[in-house]
Figure 1: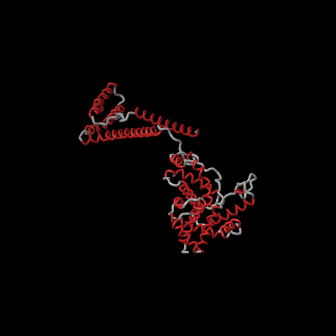
Figure 2: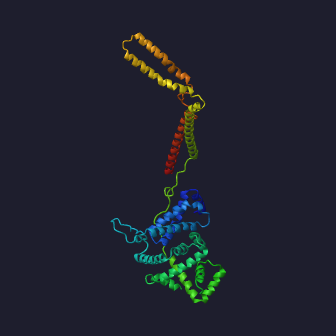
Figure 3: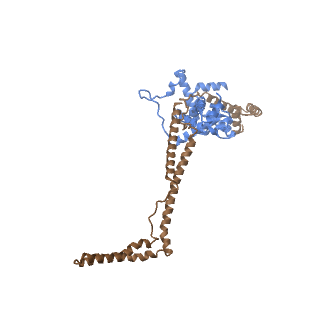
Length: 201
Length: 228
């Protein structure tokens, strides 16, 4: 994928070129939104909003890391969504089966490769981590999601969050410490994961 | 361990964000200070556990449609020219209407002010003289009719004489009146418009044609875009 060429075409209004970029980055964008918002439906909405906003403001992209620039639009969309949630909290509806019954965990059906036990363990771990992420202040959460989950370097996190490099350093460190503290409370729930980490020490 | 500054350095070192000299210094301090070593492990575990989070796949494709981003179909090159021409023709038409109306108002204003000027210059004298005579004339006729009614036995000849006499007194005033009052207001002639109406018709035709062309170009562009 020739990213600079696609960006240039998209800047001239070529929607197909932009959609190629969308397909390339959509998992990353959705993943970031899910970790910041902690909800699949809200994350999907925020991701869509982020891509629309990115296309409209593509002319403001002046080179550099497109990934970091895109992450900024995602975090902005997530902050907007969080503000909206604060103003008007809603209860998302669970998806229904063909019989009209609620599906307790639609994610259960998503990956056929894992056994139910493995899936349950993975879900537990994921829920525990997400719970601890949700407990972080939004700015710390964003910093740690971008740095540790998306693998952005500090300068990219700074671009994506529009904060100075020093602030990124501080937020990432604080977020990690708080996460570690929070996850200690789940040691009984997540024995295997923590055992592995403890063995490494 | 010197508070949060050390933690920041440890975290940055974990991410490879320190230069080699700083990194070596942090490493030696970590080896000397068990508290720092423990904090470093905490940070490392937190970082590692976040890596254990499964990567979530997008539940759908987030590709955009033209409608989503409000993109409009690319219009033909001639579109702006037609738009400008139509707008210009509309402006000209409105201006022509305004100019013609203004000239009419001006004409009627000057016509209305003309008699007033005549009085001021002494031209109104004959009018003033005519007025009493004009009022007297009907009185004379009434008297003649009354006389004729009072003397029904009078011969037709005398009646004719009477009417002749009456005419003699009456006719000069009524017949001379128009010739003696040259400044009396004349009926207004229809003023010639500054912009001929044929021009206005041409302008209207141009506007309609322009609008039609713009509409057609729009529709054509939309249809072409939909089929792409």
